[in-house]
Length: 201
Image 1 (cartoon, one colour):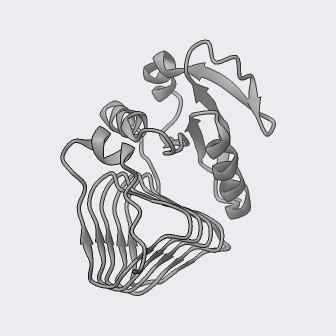
Image 2 (cartoon, rainbow, N blue to C red):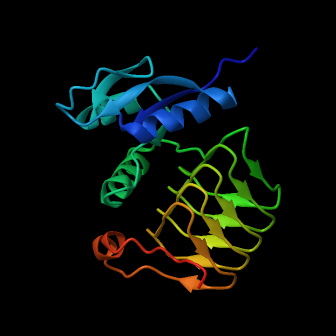
């Protein structure tokens, strides 16, 4: 039996716990450890040790090929984007992760560093770009496009042909109607703080 590839998790907060559960359920990866900010005081998450801080990533790159950003997106997207780009610059591979309890059509696409959580669904010709969170029970319908660094939260629905621009946040239970295009402002900070939630009206 081939050994499972080792993967580093970057960020030791609550979202990390949810990511660990997806990784464990998939059975495809060995979690090598967690990297968190310096001085966070966190020693382990669900039994996996914190083995370094952000400053250690260049050294850790010499040992590990794979890493994944496990920072959530509930206050600002800036850190998540910064870490994703930093890992890329260091040459880490950032896989797309899919829960075995999710459904992703063979005709759908997900980008690097994106996670599809438990019971989410991506239908045919749905496209989710890089560094996104498709949270539990979210629905991405046919021909929908989710651009980089988006978070589609628990139970949200992105209907057919709808598009989310970069760094959008769609809150729990929100519904984006079919063929609606909602592109974030170029100012990611402003866009995220306004928390674009699009409901059916």
